[in-house]
Image 1: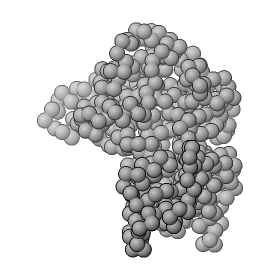
Image 2 (image 1 turned 180 degrees about the horizontal axis):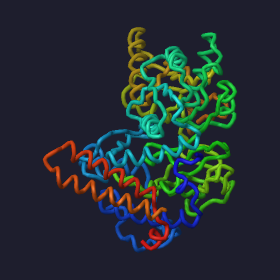
Image 3 (image 1 turned 180 degrees about the vertical axis):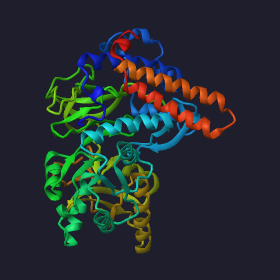
Image 4 (image 1 turned 30 degrees about the vertical axis):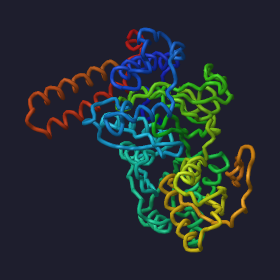
Length: 437
Length: 56
């Protein structure tokens, strides 16, 4: 069987359109009735005003900034974003918080199971089946991606092996010990495991991984190919986020990613006006509405993901819309070791907590197969050697808390870093294709 | 076929609701019936009838 849900994955276009319009209208009314954010935001628009998919374009986007604002009210910590009674919430997740205060995401049992069901499509499309013993080399923490992977693996019928609380060598031994044949990881970590295995005298291809599903950071085609060569396995990609869920995944044809319809209504809109759907082959911003998740209603969420719209049709037989490739984000955040990172977060920490630091510079480099992030901090002239050491330690700790990344911290002598009269260029991304600002 | 599946889902829904009525003092049965209703919601979501959806 090639499809997780043969009926739902091969519908004619007009059926998808009918169902998605109907589900959208239902979710619109639900959000307006149950969420403080949408009670205010959708005032003056009624369900009866939405008669076609074109009418949806009249409804305002949902932006992360306003979500933060509505989160501040009761009930804590979800505020006006909550779409269910607080006593129905059964799990907490959050965004990484790299662009500001994290968004706290409530899941009821129902919403979580809806989310898991949509994730099953991603796994099944990528060829994961009950015969796979899937290793997840992460502790999942409060971040959603690998929790979804975990639960969806179980639902599809795979045998799931959680691999948190081990170091990389331990994980490699565990893969060998239990003969895992599937893996889910960030592309960077997949490369690192391969490198570490080689240093242990183990050919990554001999680990026996047949399928790998990647998450957490953009994966250029060359990286996917490199992983396939190293492990001699099939490697698949998908796209999503904590707020909108995972909304598209790669099938075995590996020709772009299928939007998981009708779980999600995805609009790919021109970057300048965010009004018009782009044509096939053009870059647009993905605007996503999850159509059945009621604990955390989201209407036209601006993901800020820049994607190339794909062609219709696929040799796999699925009839859903596709995206060809993910090309970046409109707000130009960086992914470092799979974590979304904004240089502004560092500036905020420094300006708020470290008066003794005058100037700074952030450098991201690729050393071997891993990203390394370094803060060069210029101390006030009056600092003693011991207080410089204390500052370094505090910096490492505060930055880890604020960004979820471990920084190398170098204290530089006063006056050694450049000063800027116009826009500062304190961030240097030395990785291939990286940008400085 | 789709309509037949829908009919069966609705039967499960009725049974789950009946269980909740019959076992109001039994948290375990109430919770498990509630879980059945969660999957009823998902089963309905993944078994839409396009013509019905079009007619609202």
